[in-house]
Amino acid sequence: MEQRIKLPKTFRYFTNGNIETAETIWFILHGYGQMPEYFIRKFQGLNPEKHFVVAPEGMHRFYLNGTSGRVGCSWMTKEARLDDISDNIDFLNTLYSNFSNQKIFKNKVLLGFSQGGATAARWHEQGNFNASHFILWGSVFPPDLSLPDNKSKFSESQNYFIVGDKDEYYNDEHISKMKKYLLENNLQFETIFYTGNHSIQIDCLEKLTIRIVKP
Image 1 (cartoon, helix red, strand yellow):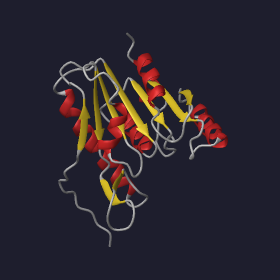
Image 2 (tube, rainbow, N blue to C red):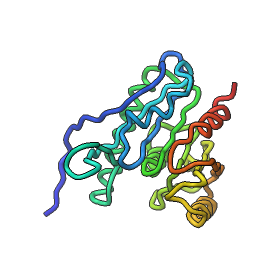
Image 3 (tube, rainbow, N blue to C red):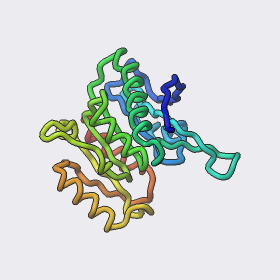
Image 4 (spheres, rainbow, N blue to C red):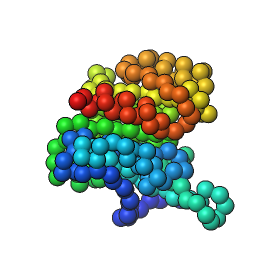
């Protein structure tokens, strides 16, 4: 008989920037097999006096090859997925509350890359962050996420779907299906293409940042 028990767990996160001076807070959710301390380096080009970046770690760690060596993280698998979804939202809610209790930010940006995109979308809709800008980067929108009619938080944020023209996980057919899904579900996303593969492309990130945080 399958049963469950809730226990305290230690979650890690990494930050970059000066929370005292920053007007914009970023929550960036890494992809499958990545580690947040390396993922956050992609965002070090943001002015640390204006941008405070938070990179939470997916709750599941594993060896990328065999039983030793490099370690990666995952947000969830198909096993006990509803428990993991709930735990992820609880973790992210608690983490954000630690920062929101310290100050009010002018802009709140939520970015989900690859596998992290689905977790980011669920948290945006069901959590406490209430992002002003939501970025789905090289990812898919979770089709099982229930959106209330005319009350979705996605209708209150600026939303972006970003993908590289050489993304090994996205071809033209995948992109067309994604755009069709967003349109059919009345999800207003601006599609942005960049030259590159399945990664955070720095030039694209910098251009988008200028639009989000106007001079």
